[in-house]
Image (cartoon, rainbow, N blue to C red):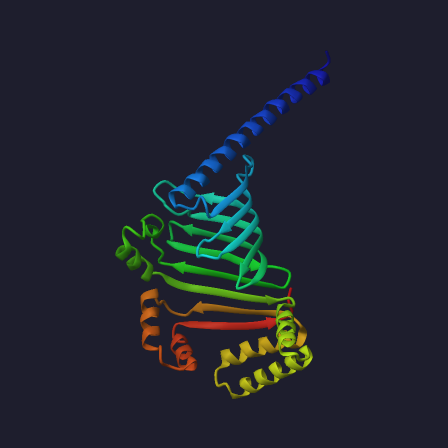
Length: 301
């Protein structure tokens, strides 16, 4: 038997062993995930509300998949939600933590029945906690379908690890105390319209037995009038973005808010309590002492 034959046999045996090991690990991992999910549903009395057709686990990537999820009557009566597939691609739960410090997940083909209308969309979420700097990064929360896309991200400083360890029901006062110490240093919100507004205008026009083009003209005219009367620079920019979307049949508006000096959640809440009866322009002027905002708009990417 020559060297090439021997090497070939060794490789074949290794592939069989590795392949078998992969299948065993995948099977054991899948069963473990299934047991954990079912246990969670049982502990929260959700067995009748949530049904899952399939489970899978990839031991090489660590990806967990739940297929054919059906949710009925939760979180409120009348709720009807179906999800084609839910994937967790990153998950880190250190000992002592109740909530993961790293988490990344996708939900594909969410079909939600709300107020007599079906909405189909995909969902993505990625967040991670820096245990050394006590910074919680919401890297991206995204909801999207063919017509629209909404994205949100934030950086939360002074985020104590206790918030991910203690049970808020058991230690409610302590939990709220830690929560109000958080310093939101950056928030970014982005809205992308790929025909969603056009679709809404057509539906409204149909109900009112009007022409969509005429309804759009009226909306644009009213928004431009409002813009000219507004004294607030931020509101003007938002209205410009809305007009751009209407005139172009789509577009993107992004709001990037960054802190110029530190202000914690408790002080923000207190400020809003006293500003409840103030005009929007006055509220924004108060927040201007702590944050600066940049609003941009343009075509949908």
